[in-house]
Image (tube, rainbow, N blue to C red; front, side, top):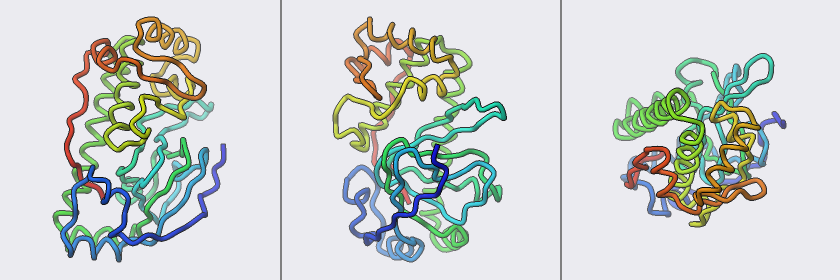
Length: 251
């Protein structure tokens, strides 16, 4: 695993932000956009497989995912990994380090990613001068907690097949909401090892579980990815109602 920090940079004006122009997120008032333009320090290009944030370290930056996707995870001393959640365009990274001084989880890039970079030491200026933006950050943190609640429920109470159905439907709907997979039904890149490390199952058990979903016509397994053939069936198997659709905030 490449743990070196991403180094490629670029700089796009906030007014031309791809997220702002996509129509999937709420717009900013002119004073908010002016503040964010000063808060921002550029963009970072992170290659697939690189580590963006490392557990136990102090990050001087906060990030918003502009494109691509990755995952949050924790490691045990013996090398076992638990994937906590997945980060997609519009997600805010590094807030934990601002509150607790150091990161208590890591974030790796699944695909090539572009991240908007902010100075962590200016975060309190945002809370003091722009309450609506502060509320947006609070909303993002609460939403992350809600998703983790659902993941914990899945690991604790759903069967292996229900867990897998929930995860793939969850990723498909989150990705579709921001056109991460270009409106296709394929979730990629994602390996069965990623799925196993998310569901808390062995790789063998995960393989058998995904085969059962394939036999039911819900998914097809592809090299480094999955094709969703019937999302409604995945929802039904997982006993999950899906994600609401609305223009959510981002920073």
